[in-house]
Each structure stands twice: as structure tokens, then as C-alpha cells.
Image 1 (cartoon, rainbow, N blue to C red):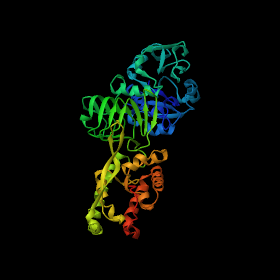
Image 2: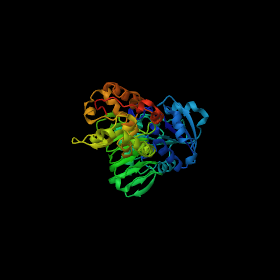
Image 3: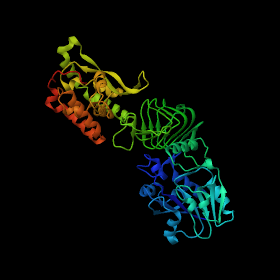
Image 4: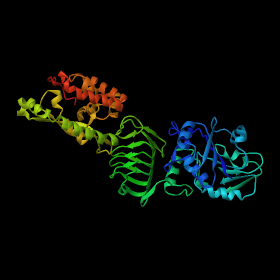
Length: 494
């Protein structure tokens, strides 16, 4: 028996919001899409030709698994409306499916050894043989002869009573068949897989330390795993002082920043977990956190806490080193201006060559109530009213990571704490920066509300390409005459 039909046509409403942008079959379980686990099982059983039945996100599934050559398979595809009667689907196909075949669903998890089950089924009498999980079809079977009846492959799962009379059944452990019909079940199947409670799954990666499995290209310190087991996918970066506890699954292309804590959770691909963020008993996908105990879905707007790494804007874990390097380069290039700044501050030397100002920056800390908040820092400025010279020492704050080169205007703690309206809080989605549209385009003596509106507009429209434009405008500001004129005295907005 060398051919199979693989159904991956669930519509997926029960797993929203995870299925808003992808198919259930492509949701990762222990670092691999569900459908890949099914393909590996079929390849292990010696199957070579597979017809894949797809519906939602069909193009994405086809791009994800291709023609099957990486498993030594030959895949073809057919499209349905989703969750159709499997028997009716195959009847429409006509001669595309002819002869004995294996039938399997690729949008749930078979935690038993499917290849061994197929071997046992081939020696069991009967026109059809199906896997029985405590009276319910496990959506795994073979068809040898007679009229084709794929009722046990239907979604949602059916009981034995719906199958043809000539059907034989081989029992499998019900706890090893995971239909994944809720977010809590999706969370649980991932943790059970990494804990090896589903022995039929082949986990990716290599054993880097006791309990720690790493995918290719990932950098994780074994010290980060405090207790339990953890599977980290490919191309991940986990800060050495991040803490992983319990049973943790981290998918491909994930960044976990400094002192973050992840406990008994599943982190999906292309997610950034920010500094000091604590995640417990949850599923995190980009900037969405799902608490599996309550079912609460939280959309996080602050990209310094959770972010989608596929978006154009750089997240904190990537952008911080880039901005620090650029800040160092900017400091070196600005050195010829520092003697000029000292001369400009000369008339005010009795009050000090440099002034200090307390600002709220981008680094994170845990306050007395256990909440994560932005940390205050002390910035220095030349004691002059010439804008281009006054702000030169703030390059040191960029190098330290308290500021970015481009961002919203940094506020004093007093002003920041007064911002309570929802529209005012929107500016928190962007980092505080040395330059930006507000610093470049809004007059220094403009009302606070005007500056806040400018910051909010920037935060909502922020893109990496626009940041580059603002950076170039900041460099060209040196040539602008208004940058060398004394600024009017204002209340301390920044």
C-alpha cells in the first residue's frame, strides 16, 4: 500500500484567533505544523503518493509543505469548501483515487505510532480498518476493497456506529488522539508533546542539555531552563538571563529578551517577548496573548512587551543593538560639534556647563506593585538654547539604550504619569527617541497637546522606512539655519 489521502480541511473557528491568518493544519505542535507530523508518519509507513485535501488557506498549505520531496513523498492537492463529507469528496475525484489506500487527517494530532498501526491494520481482516479511540474514530484507517466509505474520517469526529458494517476496528489509546477542538487543548497538546507523552511524534532539534531541545541556528543558554523541559525551534534568540520553567514550547524565529519569564506556555513563530515580561499558562502569537485558564485574549499594543517580528517595524530585541551602534557612530561623527557646544554654554557656565533632566526612557523595570513600566533615567544637555547643540549629550542615552535614535519625544515622569486618556496612551506603542516627527516638525513652544497628537500619529503610522527618513532629516537639520537659533524658553515637556 503506497498511496494515501490526507484531509486538512478544517475551517478552524474553534481555534480563533490563532486561525484568523492561517490553517489549523499549519499551527505548530512541538515546533512542527500539525500536517508535517502526519506526513512524517505516512513516510515512515512507506507511503509515497498522497492526495492532500485542503480548504481554508490552501495556497499557504501548499507553499508550506510543497510537493513533498523533503519527506520522499509525491503530493498532489484538491480543494474543497471545508469540512465536507470525505466520501463525497473522494467520489468527485473519480480515478484520481483508485485501489487500496491509507486515510488520515492532518489537522489533528495522532500521538501513537501511526506507521506501526498501519502495519497492524494491513494484517487485520476486513474491507476497511479504522483506529478506535474509546468508541470514537481516531481519523486513521485503511481501505482495501468494497465501496469506499470514509465516514470515520469526517470532521467533527464520529462514533463507530456511523461506519459501514464490514468495518474492522483496532483500538488505540484515547489520550494519544488529540482532536484539538479548543485553545486549551492546543496548549495542552504542545506541552504533552515536549514532555514526550505523545510517543508517536518525532520532535525536531538536538538535545543541548538535560530537558532542553534546540532547533538549528538557535542560541539559548542552558542556565535559562530553571526546571522542567523546553523545546526551542529554529533561529531563536533567548537572553541568557531569561527564565524558562515548567513545560515550554518556543516555535521558530522567536526572540525572548532580558529577564523575561516563560512558564508552562506556548510561544508561536515570529514572536518577540520583551524585557521583564512574565508569561504563565498562556499561548502567545505575535502581540496576542491567550490565557488558557480563562480563555481571555489580550491584544498588546506596546511593541516593547510583545511584538510581531514579521512586521516592518523592528522590535526591541532587534532594534536595541542597531540603535546603540548607530548612536555610537553618531557620537563619533558629532565630536567636532562638542567644542562649539561648550563655547555656546560658556555664558551660562556659572549654572554649570551641562544640565541634567529626568526622563522616562525605553528600559523596563518592575514597580512596587509588580507591574512592568518604563524606567526613568537621567539625561544630560549642554546649557545652551541652541537646539542642535543642546541635545548632543543625549546620544549617550541612545548608546545606553534609554533612548532610540528615532521615536516619540521623551517625557518627564511627571508629564508621563498624567497621560490617562486612551488616545494619549497610544504613544506608548512607540519608543522614546532622540529625533522624530515631533522633535523635527513641531515648534518647541507648541502646546503639549499638539506635541502629543504628533507623537500619537507617529506611533500609529510607524514603519522602518519612515524611521530612516526621519533619521536622514535629523542629519540634514545640521544645515538648517533654524537649528542654530536659540529656542524659546518652554515648560519642561521633555
